Length: 250
Image (cartoon, rainbow, N blue to C red; front, side, top):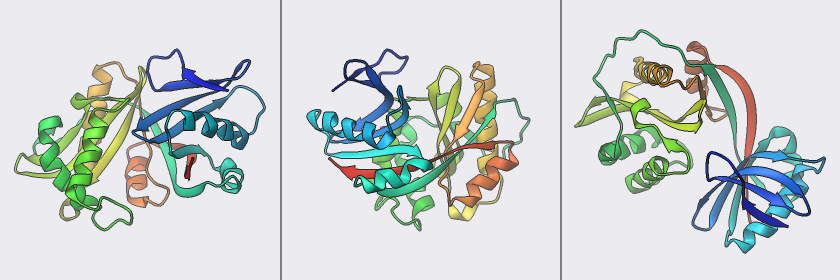
């Protein structure tokens, strides 16, 4: 078996090859940790067998911790193979279209220079969630990784509400492909929720996507995040896919 780069528009696509290609997948790596998603099996091999082959080859690449995202139907077989369930996610998608809006607070694009202030907001927004950021530094690290990751960060389609001294809400968008963008982060300070700020930021993002010729927008809220799921449904997004995230050591 051999893992090698795949010919694609992004350098995060890989293929596992024996005497022929077995599986195409997306690989995001951070030091010794890897996240594998969008697994496309090219034959009738079960996903747990394919992931077993991947574990062997990723070990040769220095990977010690593996996270995989698969359909919920593969949960039982991968659990039996030693993986532990971390979280379930639901994909919502819609065609981007221009929306009239009237921001309640000033809207600005999010660049690297906003990261320190945005980190404080992100920490406050997630403070009461189990397993969320332990401190502002971990939130800042997550933001910098997002803005410099494999998926292209779209500063022009990412918006924050408030002033430079008091950011209260943010929507950060990345580019999955030439035809699809992704809401990578959406968070609001607890004192400013239910005021339509996130709705306005998503609308502003779609307006930019329309003018830039990117027709589709998706989001992956956690299965239990009913607040975001209600917001997306209200804005015309439709649920079209579910995945489970599992983790294991290699």
